[in-house]
Amino acid sequence: MEKKIGEVLLSVDHISLAFGGVKALTDICFGIREKEVFAIIGPNGAGKTSMLNVINGFYHPQEGEITYKGIHRKQMKSHDAAVQGIARTFQNVALFKGMSTLDNIMTGRIIHMKRNLFWQSLYLGPARKEEMENREYVEDIIDFLEIQHIRKTPVSRLPYGLKKACRVGTRACGRA
Image (cartoon, rainbow, N blue to C red):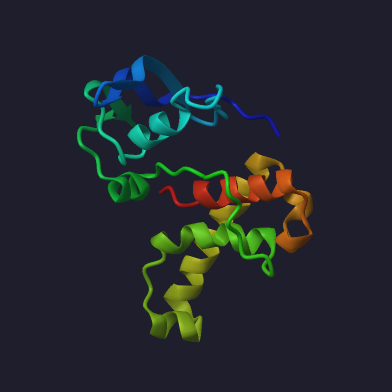
């Protein structure tokens, strides 16, 4: 499957962040394009986590600007960032071990499920349609991550690297 890189979705322009006299980030700039896999790497203390915390709205930089899908994000709250589609994963692999890769990734779609408990318990009409639409979205993420071969495998049986891929898929599914 060919992945075509698209336009810039997230732009980080001249971000600086300090905690008291300690400069965590100084004049950081980069852009992330649609369908691009982007990594932030560096040694301990380089500011990787601080940069991710700025992107997802947990920290607010003293200088610079973040633009997501053409919208400037000033003083964004982390829950607003999640609703807009900005998600992150952590070093710990927090998955439901007894569930399959597909089912774990589906948990990322929960914030997009609008039908109430009544409809969900009956699994009829609108609830079923909603479930199928979200499952299709998850299948696209699985294809993008190229993990089709572990779709039905319980995550407890996966090696660490594939568990991380499953976790990335779960976080990616939280976006709209």
